[in-house]
Image 1 (cartoon, rainbow, N blue to C red):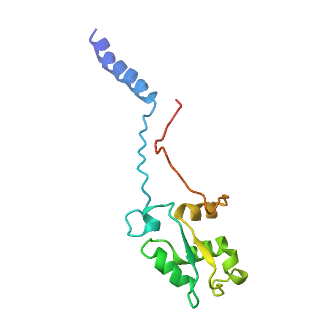
Image 2: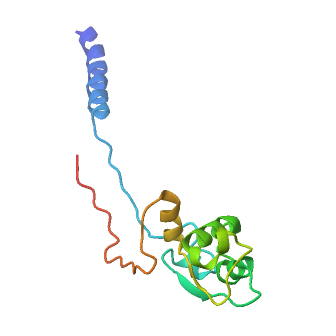
Image 3: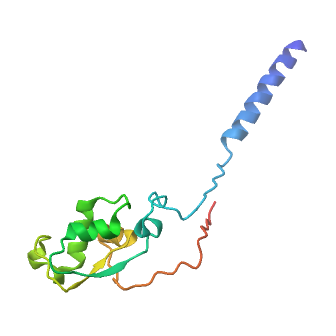
Length: 141
């Protein structure tokens, strides 16, 4: 009889362990709509959809334009040069950053537009983005 009492706790532990192993995980997702760059003091970093237009002045360089608009954003200057040149063919001779055409208006892309450009996703430069709902919904089991 004493032998049966010894097996009872072992049986109980084995039974509860299998129930715990078969339990499904519970996942909680938190979405705060904040980018890694949002703590910076720059319009482009604070709002990932912020864009600007700029008219090139005589004697201005692309580096000066990038410094004026993107300074403090934390974005890589060389990557910004590539993005701006590829989105504004009309303002650069032979896609060369050293040959900008004065009095042309260029589009300064947002972080989201640069991301789409990098991923090869088509987008309209003048497209307004409106997020009415920032909720994440998960359906499944």
